Length: 330
Ligand SMILES: C=C1C[C@]23C[C@@]1(O)CC[C@H]2[C@@]12CC[C@H](O)[C@@](C)(C(=O)O1)[C@H]2[C@@H]3C(=O)O
Ligand SMILES: O=C(O)CCC(=O)C(=O)O
Ligand SMILES: [Fe+2]
Image 1: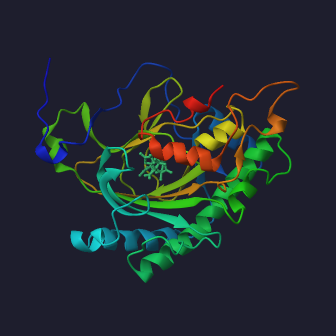
Image 2: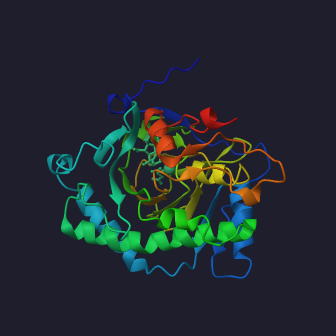
């Protein structure tokens, strides 16, 4: 047996095996959908059923909106540690470094986690380090929540659910629980001392609890997703697209027809990765149960009744990699 000596800086961070090529059917690549094209609704549902993941292209959000936020984020993460720590520790909101959540998960990253108001502005409760960063987040979130709404409308239409806003209105609700996160994965030169088959965990494998998450990153690779057969595949970065991730709540609302997707980020030895993710969650009182149109006559839902508030509370007690839906399955 080969025993790997981990450099001390990585002591508490797990190593991951790099995806191995071969086995299973070949991954045809991440589906790309133009939400304005004819057939978009069916393409969205097909991608969500097969992968729980796709990318939105030709989305109409000006590149400058994301670039401005990325520049602000890079400037913030370059500040002295003590200044960044003044916006933390993340519990759950604010600046966090290496620790993810409250239950011992660790990754090679630092981040800012913020709550978003209905006016798509960062909520007053979130510790935002500067007014220029706040302005950039507000402008970006204002645009990206429109993408999330269009995706949820396409899902409803593609599944034949009426009205078309049956899902998107859960996120538009005045009390909806929207979260925004900027992750910075610094280069991890220590990786070069590990065998090629090994990587360092940036963000450990997990599913997102919300309905959908909309992710945009810079051009640095690292995101991977688990295919339905359990194989991990890398997602080529595309700074001009938004990646959409199906979350646990959408899985339940569609009675398992769309399944949430496990994903993770591995560290890069040379280049920093910056990602920004908008998590579209419903109001705490929202009942998360299969939409009646998606249940056949007399068919039972696969999950016991719960509200988003119940689920979020349970999620925050879980470890990142736990299968959080399991206790809710009938
Ligand atoms: C370990 C954890 C971090 C997390 C809360 C949790 O207890 C389990 C879910 C995690 C997750 C994953 C998706 C999002 O990044 C996130 C903000 C969320 O809503 O659920 C994180 C939570 C977090 O980092 O606080
Ligand atoms: O940083 C990334 O690319 C993905 C992070 C992620 O999955 C998350 O924050 O939930
Ligand atoms: Fe995630």
